[in-house]
Length: 230
Image (cartoon, rainbow, N blue to C red; front, side, top):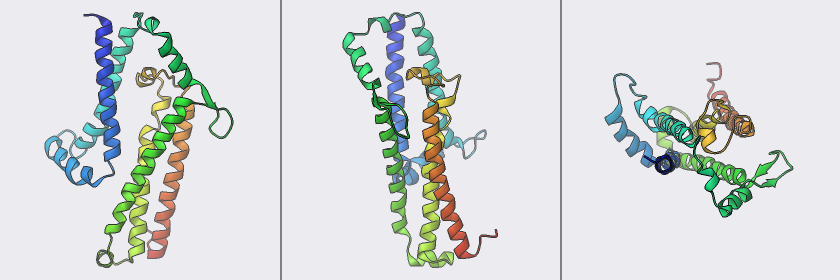
């Protein structure tokens, strides 16, 4: 079988999986995922070996491992292929435009067009996740707070701290991908671990900001409720 056909098939499959992963990250903070999708998946995949973590492994771990495996095969088949040499000048020109620096000064350093676009999309995902989580605070009523023996604002602050932490988990989930030296995912994107260090730094800063706010909110709640000694 022609290696170019196999690589094209793998490329399309990887695109579908990537879009599926993006969809799951977008749906993760929604009630649809929490109340319908995840319980339905849990009923079917909870196993003796993985227990209650089976749904998380199926949704978040398996797709990435599958992408890495397919990526290894894709890169292996492309080593002796002349497919790259047959790229049109127009396609090469478009790629060059996306990789052209659009920011050369500032805290982010030298940033290309595609890097800036991906950064904006990632921040949009964080904003979407946080806003979607925080919308659940409207369901907290004085009656619900009274059952817990706290004030409404205390219960909202406690839950807000949790939601900020969950948003921080999005950054944490991607934090170490840019520095994996043996990764097959980075070469698929035309990246190296050395050239991706700045992405690790960006994600690290965002992670620390979100988790710092997460911790401060909990400390305030514990101090007000008199539980800080615990």
